[in-house]
Length: 418
Image: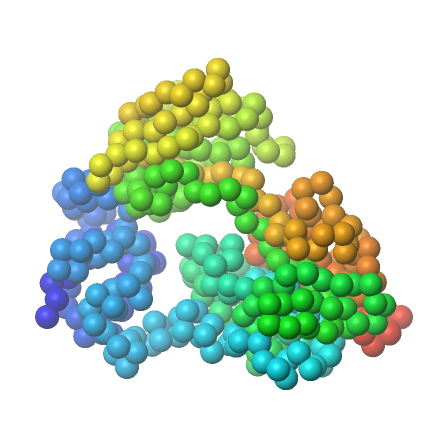
C-alpha cells in the first residue's frame, strides 16, 4: 500500500475533492491541515511549496488537484476510479468529440460553431434545440481559457465551486443531448463568398454550413515567462485567495496591468510584508486605477517594469526584471503572482473573410452579425468590456437565435421560452 500524506487547508474545495478521490480508490492517507497547524505550513515552505492541496505519494509531490496523475502513480485503473473522476472532462471529451468522418463532410449543416468553449457550447445548445443540424469544431476541447480555469464560483445556477473543465463538460453534454455533433479538428481556412453555403477547410476535408458562429476565444500571444512553469506551486501563483496565506511576512511581486492585478495586490498586502506591483507599461488597462494602492504602506507600484525570468533552486528565490531605464536587475523575492493581460483573439485563419479590427477582434453588430450575412461572432472573438464565461455563453444564445432566423428566413428572432 502506498504511503500518502495530504497537505490541505480549511475551506479548500480541491482538498476535499482529493480526499474523496483517495477514499473512493481505497487508499488511506494522513492529512496535515496547514490552517490548523502552522508547523505544516513550515513543512511545505521548507520544500519550496506554497500552495494546497499537495499530496506526497511515496515521497513524490503532486501539487494541486491532479487526479489522473495520482491515479497513474497509484496504479488505479478506470474500474477503481471514483465516480467524480470517471466523469471528468478528460474522459468524457474523448467520447463527446469524435474524429471527422466521411459522412460529416458529406453533410450540409445548418449551423457550425468554430470553437467549443462557453460561447460555442451555449450556441450549440440553442441551435440544436431549435432543430438546426448543428456541429461544433474544436481543435483542443480541454485546453481553452475556460477549460484550464482552476476555480469558478460565480457562474449563475451553479452553486459552490467547480473547475472550468467541469462546467464546460456540462455544457458539452447538454449540447450533445440536444443532438449536436462534435469533432476534434482545426479550421485552416474559410470561404464565405457563397451566399448560401459557407465552406470551412479542415486538414481532413471541407465542412459545408448554412450559417457559422466564430467562437474561437483568445489566447496569450507569447510563451510563458522563463521559470514560470517550473515554479508553479513553488512560489508562482495565479490566485491570492488560494495562496496568500503562504506568503505571510514575505516579499512578493504581482505582475500585471489589469483590474485583477490591482485587486490581488490589495489582497496580498494583508498577508505579505512587501508587495511590488510590476506594471509592464506606463498605464493600466481600461479604466483601472492604481489610486487606491497609494495609501497602502507595504505596496509599491513600479511602472514600466517587465518580468523577464523567475529563478531559484527548489522554489522561487529571485526574479529578473527590466526596469524603466531598460536595465536588467535581479531581486530577491519569495513569490510571484501573475495577472498578465495581452490575450489575442485566435482569428488569424479568417484572413479577410470578415471584417476585423486592428487587434484581430471580429467586428459585429448588436446581434453579433459580422460583415457577412449568416456569419456570427462572439465570446472572446469579439471585443467585449470584460472577459467572463457567462458573457460568452450569452453571446452563444444570441448567435444561435440569429442563425435560426437566417436559416429559416424568419423576419425576426424567435426566442425559446419552454
